[in-house]
Length: 145
View 1 (tube, rainbow, N blue to C red):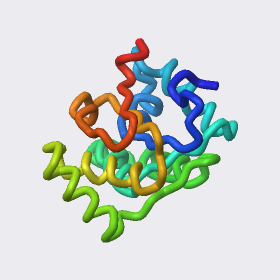
View 2 (view 1 turned 45 degrees about the vertical axis):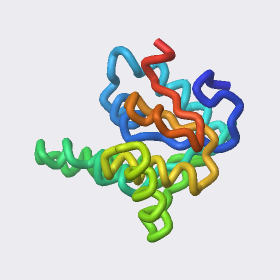
View 3 (view 1 turned 135 degrees about the vertical axis):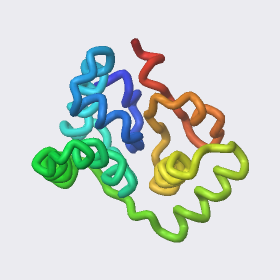
C-alpha cells in the first residue's frame, strides 16, 4: 500500500499528480509512481474531475504535440480504478460554497468539490491552499519528500 493512499478507499487526485508523473518530475516521480501503482492495483479507487483532462492537455497542445495529448487522454481513459467525475451542477454548487468559504481558485474549488461529492476521504495535491478545506483530509506531496 502506498503511504499516500493511507488505507483510504476513495481518494481524489489533483492534476499535479498526473503532471509530475507523466513528466517524470525528479522530486515527485517516486511518490506518484507508488500512488498510481496502488490505484491501478485496486488498493483504492481514485477520482478525478473532467477538468483534469483540460489542465493536463494544455502544455502538449501549446507545444503542438497532439500525439502526446492523445496519449494522455488514452492513459486516463483506460487507467484502472480511476473514476472520471462530470463537472455537474451539483459540483459547481459545492465548488461555489468552497470558493466562498476558503477562497480557493475556481478550478481548485471544482477539484475539491468533486472529491468531496464522490466520497473521497483524502485529496492529494501539492497546493497548500487546499489545506484550508475542512470537509475532507488534504495531503500535499511535498509532505512526503
